[in-house]
Image (cartoon, rainbow, N blue to C red; front, top):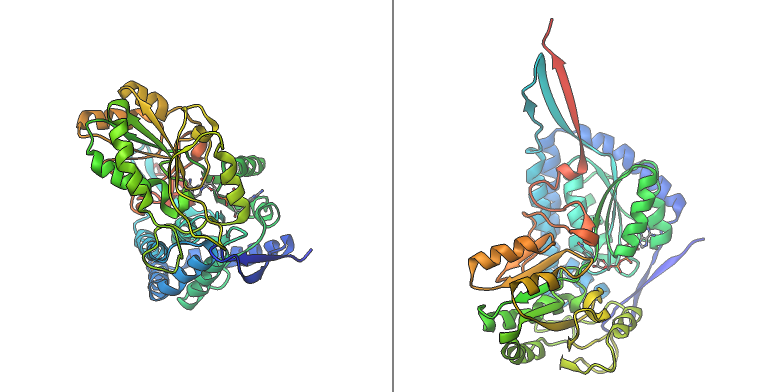
Length: 454
Ligand code: NAD
C-alpha cells in the first residue's frame, strides 16, 4: 500500500507538505543500490574518501541556515538551537573525515610469525532516528559509518524527514556517490522493520524509545546483526548544599527545558540536599519563568512547542491533577502544541519521578546526604546522563563514579561533544557513539596471522 506522511508545523498546526513513505519493496531496492555503492566506496583510497566527506561538511556548512529553518518548521525548535544543530553536523562530518586515515589496525607480538589486525567496513548500515534531534542524531550514525567505508540507509522519524532529505541532497552535491547515503522516510513498523530485518543490512543504529529498542534488539538477534541502541533517560541533577546554588539554579531550567524537554539527556529529576532545598527552589522559580516559550522563528525564544498533539496528551497524562505544580511557566495562547514548563514536588517513587516524560516537566526531590543522593540517583531503570553540583572535588568524583550512567557532568549540564563517547548504562542503551572510537564501531576487526616459519 502506498502511503504518505503528513508533515505538520508543531508551532502553527499547519500542514507543511506530504512525503511518500518508503515501501518494503523500495527498501529492498535501496539496500541493493547501497551494497553496490559501498563496495566501490570501500575500495577508494582513504585520502579520497576523507576529501569527499570534507566537501560534504563544507556543503552542509554553506547551507546551515536553510537546514536550520527546516528543523524549525518540522520540529518546532527555536531557530538559535536549530542553527547549533546544523553546525554540529558540519563539525561531526569534519571530525569523521579526519578519522578515515587514522583508522589503523595493530601489530601484536606473537610466536612464530606476525599478527595484524584490520578494521573492515561492515557493508550497509541502517540508521533509525527519532524526531527530537533530526539532524544531529542522523549525523552521529551516518558520519562515522560513511567514514569507515560503509553505506548508510537512514530512516528519519515519521514527523521529521525534511531536514535529513535535504542533507542527503547536499551529500550528492558534495560528491558522495549515488546510493551510498539514502534517506528512506516511512513508518517505523513498516519501513523501519523492513530495514532491520533485511539480511543485507549488517548493522542497525537505533535511537528512540526503550520499548522500540527492545523490539529491534530481538529482531536483530535472529540474524546476529550488529546493533547500537541509544534509548531513553530520566537523568538526575544532584545539587549539594555546598554548591554554587545561584549557578546551579540558573542553569537547571535549560537542563530540563531545552528542546521542550524532548531530550534523552534532560535532567528531569532535580535532587537537592534538604538543607539547601528551600533556597534552591526560591532561586529556581524566576529562572524557570524566564525561559520564554514562543514563536520558534524569533531569535529570543528559548522554548518551542512539543512535537505533536498526541505527544502533548502523553506529557499531560503524567502530570497528576491532584499535585499542584511548585513552579509553572507561561505558554502562548492559540495554535501550537504548547505545554508550560512545570516543576512538581513529587515523592521519589511517584510515576512522574521515575518514567521518562519527554516534555518540559521536572520533579524536585530533597535528599539527606551523599549516600541518599546516590541511592535516589540510581533508583531508575535508566542510566544515560546526570549532573553533580558541589565544590568538593572528592565528593564530585565519588558521586560521579557511583551513579550508573554513561554521561555525567560536574558543575555543568554538558552531555554531548562529538569528540567524546556518548551512550547509556542499563535500559538507556547499548554501545557508544561519537568520540575517538566512533569509526571503529562501524567495522569488524579482522585478525591475520602470518607464519614466518619457512
Ligand atoms: P520511537 O522509538 O517511537 O521511534 C524512533 C524511531 O524508530 C522512529 O524513526 C520510528 O519511526 C522508528 N520505529 C518505530 N517503531 C519501529 C519498529 N518497529 N522498527 C523499526 N523502527 C521503528 O521514539 P521517538 O518517540 O521518535 O523518540 C523519543 C525517544 O527517543 C525517547 O525515549 C528518547 O529518550 C529517545 N532518544 C534517545 C537518545 C539517546 O541518544 N539515548 C537520543 C534522542 C532520543
